Image 1: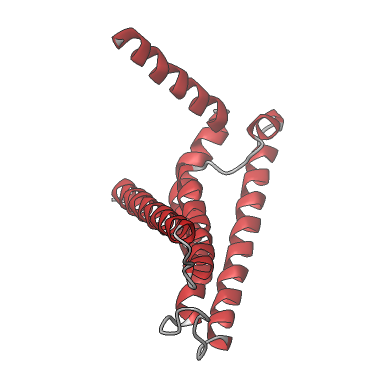
Image 2 (image 1 turned 120 degrees about the horizontal axis):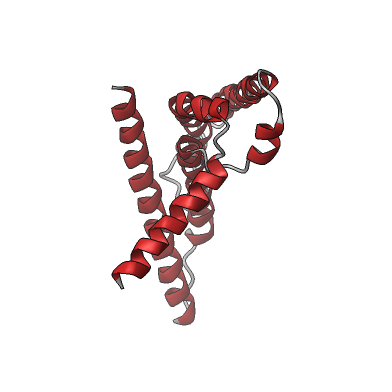
Length: 180
């Protein structure tokens, strides 16, 4: 069940981030075409900035699930056991603490901006656009928790996620070259 929940989050986040990227790309292309034709879209800048923020938050959660954020595997794996696992626990707790604080701050921001709407698209509440802060933070926490058991096992075994990713990519390219 744990792996199926992780897979669900991975697929859902992946499709949602791609969806947001397609929407942002379409808006930018339409805005450029309008500008070339001598007319500007009043709402383009505001909506594009919001979509970029959403892509960042949801993409960050996806990266957390895949453990693809910047890390220091080589340094971490050089630390002897059990100090290595204490370092992992401290890093995970610090990251979780930050995102708990971010979620709380996001809910506070949403309550403060509750009655406001966007400047150029007045029917869109600012609280909806800013909901990405607490929702993204909570998703990051969930994704971090879902990916932690595998990360814990690999780190305890001395397996580098960075090196595993590189080896996996090399193997994929070798297979492609062999089939070509």
